[in-house]
Amino acid sequence: MRRRAARSRGSGDSEFAKRPTDTFGVKFPTPPSVRRAMLITYRGAIAAAALFTAAYSATGTENRPPAAATSRADYAGRAARAYAALGKNLLIIRSSVVPASFDAATFDQDPNFFYFTGADRMLGAILLLDGAARRAELFVPRQLPTRLRFLAGDVRSSSLSPDSLHVDRISDWSAFATYVDGRLGIDSSVIIYVDDGAFATGGMATLGTPLDSLATLANPYRQWQRLLHERWPKADVRDDDGMLQMLRAVKDSAELAVLRRVAETSAAAFLAGLARFAPGRRQRDVEAAVVATCTRMGDGPSFWPWAMSGPNAAFPAPFASILAPHHLDRVMHTGEVARLDIGCEIDHYMGDVGRTVPVSGAFTADQAEVVDLLAAAYRAGVATIRDRTTIAAVIEASIDDVKRRRPSLRSPLAKEAAALIARPGGIPYWQLHGIGLEDAELAPDTLRAGMVVDYEPIFVVAGQGFYMEDMLLVTASGAEILTKGLPTTAREIERASRPR
Image 1: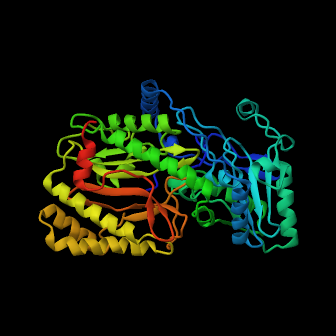
Image 2: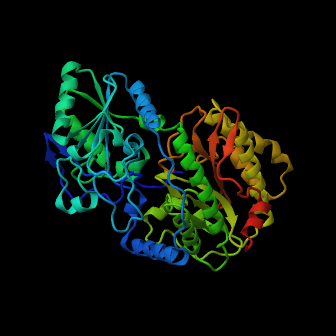
Image 3: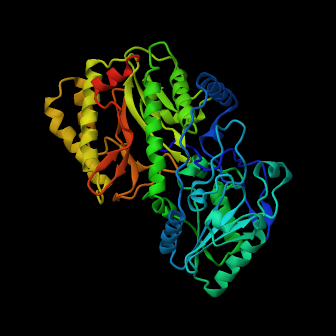
């Protein structure tokens, strides 16, 4: 489930602090905003910092294997797929524009920019992919502002290597408008596609200002697109409409190598968090254990952990945490279930895995029957996943399994859950999403081999939230569970909850 409010892909961007800067005839808007870290309030940031400090002091840092090398062929393949999708048209992708804020766990480059260039620290660059010329050109500022220069170093075009950034040419910012003018002069029907931020925009797309009813000031992706419209008013400027997400959906060998490590680390972090549940403890205790493991074994959490107990576990209640100074922290109580939904990040790739777990280490009899119903339905859905399976077919297989088991259910809670799942429109949050450079990516209606996805059944019955998900690799013949060794049934989850 998409949680990072601005998967910015680029941490700490301020959407209101600066006016657009006028350079080479194009006004540059506020930078792409990053994810959830930007939504942390002052007190929430203090709490996050305290937990990170505790995690580091308690665990130190483990040696990790080096990042899997992404080959020239991998980058060339990514560009070739983009050119094929573009035809004669252009695609414009901006890097992040400002460094991470001090309350952010890390700096995250814009995922689409990183995907094509491998540049994880570059600021202020514009990548232009030209489908007709099958050419990638990077435009960089002549010089960064003084207060950024000591952080990012020399970004002038003369100091950068096209080969190291997997582009054909690196040019000064001033050449950007000239290039676009030239292409439009040759063919005015060329479409200019612009990275729309996809999930990264989060709530930015909805709230404007009294002077901006279209919310462009609150959405730097939309603001950037509007400025391109203003610079080329007769051109067809439009958002990429999921094109970039679809290009990134099938992972190459380098991505799969990293995602396997991400899944292994995320599974370990899940078990570390599971061991911290107990009546009388706070949700923050669980979160700290997850963060400690993700930090020790990887690059930190891919999103702030959800250890949502009691009423907080009833979806979509967990989303309220992004505006809560203490992330909906509460004392957990006997008899409650909790949603443990976590992921670790390694080399910019994100994890996402979770289960419904018992706060006390043991489910009540009716809760256990619901968990086992969910587990069976989940396995039935996963069993259908392979190349060319549709998402609808996966979900339908789970629903059919619940219908088959419905007559044998004993507890009123399980019977109510089965009736809910079988009812048309009863499971609006049940989903399957992609995962990679973002913890939730669009997945096409038809799955293809090489995609990494999360199958995520979610429902609420009698005020209690139930859910399950793993990271899955789609293959020609089935689904490989990447988050290996995790409990699935009620009894397995209870055994894994016991102190080790």
